[in-house]
Image (cartoon, rainbow, N blue to C red):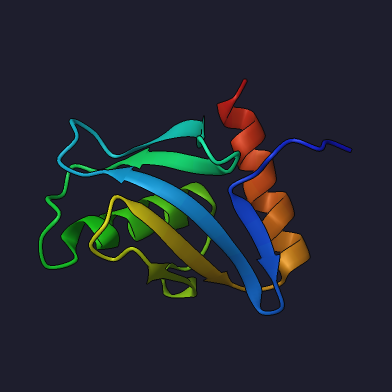
Length: 110
């Protein structure tokens, strides 16, 4: 069991994921984890879409849904809709989602 900080937090109806998004990037990709000055952790992601009219948020949801094999409708931006720092809520079983996303994040770190 690891005590490392994670961007994923369990909730009663799913999980939340803290994200730092880079819009207008050269490719859509999950870049890895970054540690914040306050001791927190965020998932770094980049999308080619511009940050206008929700296009970057939609691209982020599409990217993460595909990467984690989840329906796009289960992901919602609940904080930071117009900011680079976002919090996404994912509906579902918190235990299943925490394991699935945790396994994907382990694959990122090698």
